[in-house]
Structures are given as structure tokens and as C-alpha cells.
Image (cartoon, rainbow, N blue to C red; front, top):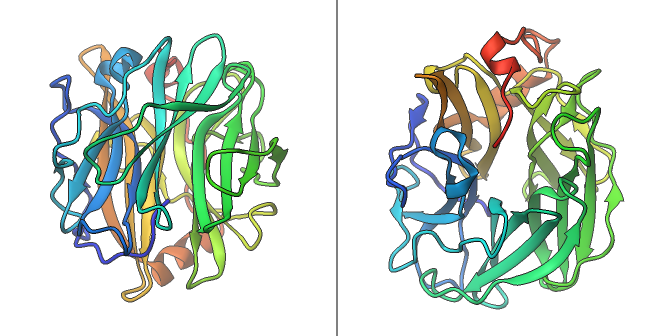
Length: 330
């Protein structure tokens, strides 16, 4: 996940305007990385997948770059998308700077008769290796892999086990360990809990060295529904036992482009300014289809955490409009 970085994202929420290879401009599942030395390109990176009207056919990981964190375009000379499926469909990219190797690692999920987590890597952001499968699980048992590199030989990966899919009764967040970011241990469940009768869905995790803690950002869902309408934040000292803050970071309807669904999101923390930048994906229902967008916003950490730590001021699971309650992924 991301290292600390100074980002010039405006305080007011701003919908990203990026070109997608399919032409729709609709995006989902952002993931941010700010490589440190010895990376020779002074760029920030954002992995996204197109999601036109919720079609998984086009949900192939794509890479965008920026010099200021505000204006994004396709990463220089990189293919668009970075990868395409061998079978099934792709989703859930997660990008990490492996600084000891001088490479970007791009993890993603290939879904079909099983969940397969794959890795491709690059030394310049333009040329990418042939993807290698790291492990496979039952369908929907390794959703949204979120990878943190603490040190050269200390890697962690969190993912959501939702065997049975989003219409299942519950989910579990699991963690794996690795010494190189490629060979991973068996998963163990972690104690990351949502409010009563809600469950974590697509998760993002980062280590915040200046705070000496992990942060996790994740939308939540009720049993037997695929709709996610609130985004929560949790903190942890060890990555296993988590404290979920009671008030949502954002709920569906807080802004027009995220009127009906709040989905997988990512963030960056800049210790020098004590600012948190968030990229939140979600959708609104327009012309008989969900239209997907990614919105950037910036908040002072102290004010953000004070708001999220208060007694619940907004319903974590607001009443679902019929169209949102009926949402199912393709």
C-alpha cells in the first residue's frame, strides 16, 4: 500500500476524470502507491479498474500516474489495461512498491471457478512481467487482497473470505504473511468487526509508521445483500486485533456520484501535514444502470478521527432504496 506523500488534492470532494481503455470513464476499486527511493520516477500511482454499468468484462487492472496527486493520466508507456484475464474475469488490484527490488508489485484477483490471486511486477511502470499465480481459494474466499510491505522480508496481506458470495450470511477478514511478497502463508482470521449485523466487504490496509499502527478502510454490508452503503475505518497495533471507529467515513448519498453505493476505497496519510487523502469508489443509479465513479477528498487527520470517534451520528446502514437493495454484481 501507500507510503507517506504530500498530495495536492482539494478539500472539496472531486470526482476523478480519467480515460479508461473501454471509453466509459467509469472506475472502481482504487489503490494508491507513492514509491520512495530508489524508484527513479517522481510519480504517484493509482490502480483502478473500469466498471462500465457494473460490467465485469472490462474490470481489468489499469494504472494511472500523477505528479501532484490531483491530475491523473495513464502511466507513461504502460499498457492499458496492465493485464487481461486468462479465464473468468479480473478485479481487485492492489499496488505496492517493493523498494529493495526497485519494482512495483501489482496484485489482483482472477475470479472463475475459484479465486486466484496473481502478481505482475515492473521496474519502470511501463513493462510488466508475465503474471504469476500466488495461490487459489474457493470462489469469493480471497476478495480484495490488501498488501503491506513493512520491511524487505516482512509482508502482510489481508483479504475478505466471503464464501458463498455477497449474498452469503457473513464474511471474515483473514491475514497471510510472506518473506518476499510472493510466497504466502495459509490465512488466519483477524478480529476486525463491523457494527452489529454488518460485515466487512472489500478492504484496504496500510501501515502508518508515524502513528505506529495499521489503518483499514472498508465498506460494510448486511447479510444476504450485495449493497454497501457505508465506509468505515479501523485501527490496529498488530494487524490482528482491530478497533473500528463508530461513525462512518462516508455513507451513500453524501454526494451525487456516490448516491446509491459506497464501495472499495483507498487512502494516503502525509505525516508532514497531518492530512489524510481518500479515494472513494461507488455508484449512483442512472438510466437503468449503476454508474461508477471514484471521488477524491482530503481531511485533517485530527479532525477526521475526532468525527469518526464520536457517538454514532449517522446510520451505518441507512435504509436501502429498492434499487440499491436489489444490487448484485455481474
